[in-house]
Length: 383
Ligand SMILES: Cc1ncc(COP(=O)(O)O)c(C=O)c1O
Image 1 (tube, rainbow, N blue to C red):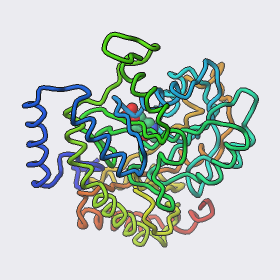
Image 2 (image 1 turned 90 degrees about the horizontal axis):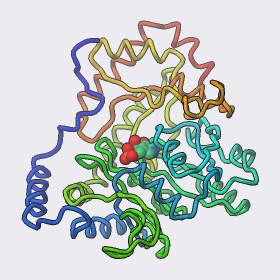
Image 3 (image 1 turned 30 degrees about the horizontal axis):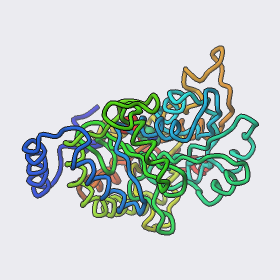
């Protein structure tokens, strides 16, 4: 591994103007002396609701909690089956289990990398009550098809929007296609806090009210419990920061799309699986993930040049240890397994410079020039 020339993600980069606004926002919170569920959280909830085009936003402590709380508020019972994708970050599955559900992992459509609607239909059984859709890497899953299936089979749909801040389809934001959309504000996300944070978005006033109670132990006023909830609240400092960052989210997402376009163009003729994207405004490119047979060799070559990369994700959810029975997988998801063996994420974030991206593109091209055998044979496996 050479000295880092292009970091995969550098969260210390931001503009000076934002630095001043953040300092002022933090000073405001310190002066006000309210640290949990105060005016900054309420204002952020309103502003994020208006950004998403949804009626209610409930700030919570993390994206994982957002999913747990949404499932609980929708009335999950122990052992209820929750259909979800085999390809996602581990917390998608963990949240289902923490909420008392049993995840049914379903294979992906290799073009979208999101859950395959035709596979969803095949896995529905008498105990299946929920469909948890993940908008992976910043691209919306096929919500039209999935909503139709859910309606026919009376499934409650929840969206995991942890990677989809600002992603839309036909002007409808991630999270507005279902009963509840669950966001994470983990620092690396398109809208990231300086610590943990999350939110549930919903158009349903009754559900919103229950979520407000569930995030706060289950109480309905200071001393009265209605049910058993959690301690899962967004704090004032994070909310104040998120308000500053939300004003920049559209510009950051535009920059992400610009960088994505350059990767698509600069690497188009190589034997790589590129994200399928028609160049529209809907994708928010939380990650730019390619795939190839020779992933590990390419990754170490880039590493030698100081270019950091990552793998999202090396292990599909159905092969994670807690979901094996007697050491064996219970679900068959060959496309997700194939994808995990090939996936490679290249650096993409708003403060990545053009020069850094050019270095990444040149290094990938150089790898294939030096290893012509891959360049000739690789396309056979292309999706
Ligand atoms: C797809 C997905 N779902 C859920 C989560 C969980 O979010 P958090 O880390 O805020 O709990 C993450 C973030 O890691 C994620 O990427």
